Image 1 (cartoon, helix red, strand yellow):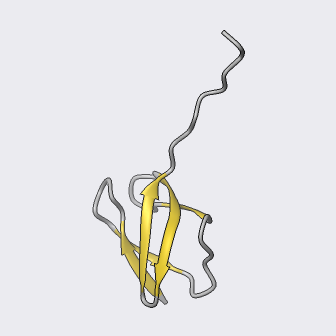
Image 2: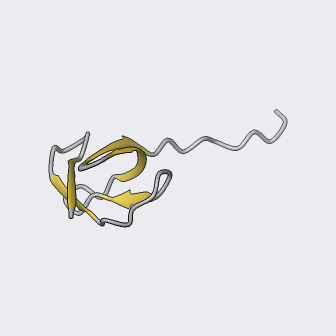
Length: 58
């Protein structure tokens, strides 16, 4: 099992072996939603999921 740190609260997250790039994970400590940006062997890079607001043509 891989591990990574939450960029917000610095908690250690256990990352499943079969995780794929673009997958959304949730931090068990702070609840932040994180996107898997890159997988390099044992290292997994996470980024805070940016929710883009909808543009209603305004």
